[in-house]
Image (cartoon, rainbow, N blue to C red; front, side, top):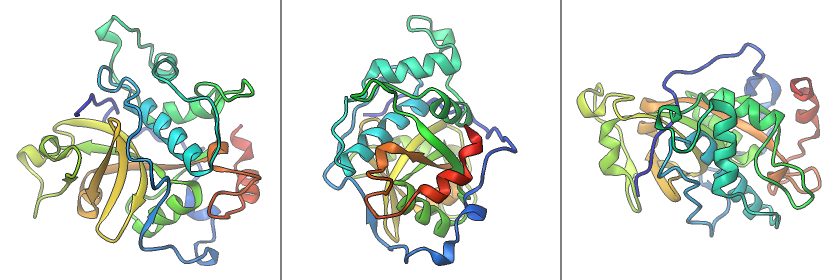
Length: 259
């Protein structure tokens, strides 16, 4: 099912946002696998009201929480539609019943809210928050793949073309044209969208969106992705380490000034 879009076109920059490459010694990391996926058996995730409202920037954070807790075997309270819409309302002023307020959000605004306030509730009453986030160079696919492995996926902004409408859904994949994208292939001709990428191989990346798995070729990625973030989240950690065994202590220390 095709839902609503809701990532405002354009990228908001903040000079305080850390970039991944200066903080992580890429050469010291274990070899990045050519095929990678977590939450292997999780093929469907909640829509999180993104079929009704342009809350994709917030719904995709819900998808990250669901998938990471599934992978790290945490059994917390499930995030629901109301939790997602609460964040969307707080960040943008959205009000159910007033379509004039349903105008989407910038990803950076949602990331900052997730760091400061968070979404939903854990079993102990605290909210799902992120300790920090870093910007990933979306044009460097090795860095993207490394971020997926370290942080449990990446949060991606896409300028969707109209051509993607017929390529959306189970068993389909978003592709790019040969040559310059024009007409229905024009970047952003459909609108902006935010998705959570949780898998890749040599040909495609896979994201959760609108409750389903959505594949995209790396050619599509290079043509239409315009921003990418990795988040440090307790939903991905058990005992200070990720399911892949990466110790987050040093990186959390480097990013602590963002609090």
